[in-house]
Image (cartoon, rainbow, N blue to C red; front, side, top):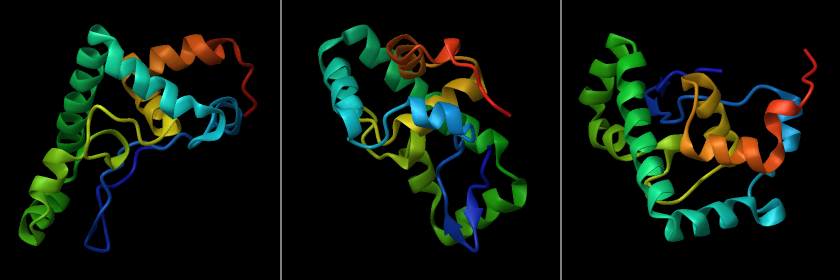
Length: 134
């Protein structure tokens, strides 16, 4: 699902939510199974992954601005949230070398046709092979 960036004059920097229950259950959430920690360690130790992940973060910020309704963009500026929307990446995370939520990472991956972390998740959890119920 694509989300609106401003709700009741409150910032909502998460652009995409994962809607599939099957995918949601196949991807460990939070610290369950240590998925986030393992990927963050990979980001720390793999220069290519880190560079690609940081580029994905910037693309997310750029896309969020591009997809935003003009009236929301103006209101965000009026409310003083512009810097927040420039700084917060995938899932609203401030530190781009970290991962807030694997589900949000994967939602973004699906929406744009591929991201570094999304490809890792595809490989690690065989997500492309899942039979999804509608």
